[in-house]
Image (cartoon, rainbow, N blue to C red; front, side, top):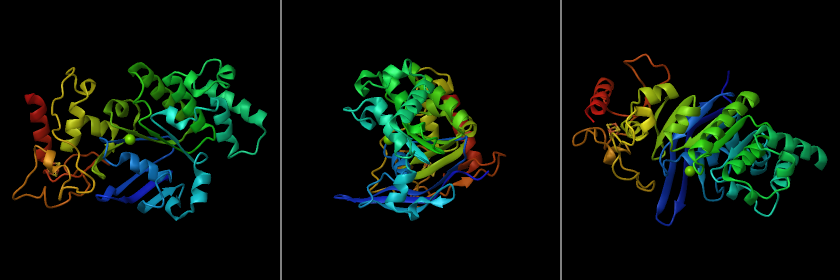
Length: 342
Ligand code: SF4
Ligand code: MG
């Protein structure tokens, strides 16, 4: 089947007092209905900007967005603000990290869900109320008819996130983007919310993009994974490929910091030193080179040539791609030796 969302060579930049920020620099990916793509990276990797651009929620006056964002075959970048606004909430919707900032504190939760529904459906308030209560029930909120009349602050964090999910899904969108949807929640509630998203996806058959810095979240919910660094794609593959056989030194660092994925409790095996680069002055060549313990410099390609995102050549891993100058054979040996030595 054709992917519902197809992003091609997305470039997003905006001016600041200190210079032009290149937040996203040539990112491509696609997501089919019924599939979940995890976009992983630290803050400043461009992952949130990518999702805001897809939703048309970037600052349209200041921000330059180039490339193509095809939603059901239609390029969102060729539409007017008004046309994108009509799609938002109906064809695509967003779940934010902090529902308190997405829900209005002065209105009841029920009223806000009703409004989200009535923007796109010509129904009476009573009909919308019935539908909203059904959705609250569906996302696991007990006593939904009572909860309907409560204010966001009367909900726990987990219940608020459920209400936010009810609001996002009430119009049955084909694309849902969830930006760090569980980051503010404790581990148990986090797992429940991810389970809920998986159940709902089976029911609604939407394409989901989940933005996270947390590979534990990815391992629980994603089918495919895109690892972003400094506005570019460092690695792409199925969740299995990336979690079991990561190829990019940045991905090695990320993975080694998730104890549940490598078995050594509380140990960061290959810590990534330093901080992500400023997106105003991205290092030449591979943007990761100042932090990479395997960088080939002086002479070497790592600080002179931007590595292309290329499929693995030696192993039969269809779809698995990496942007790193290390020769593939050496990459695998290096990683396995390093993991074995700590
Ligand atoms: Fe490290 Fe060079 Fe690979 Fe970048 S291209 S991740 S600097 S080895
Ligand atoms: Mg973010």
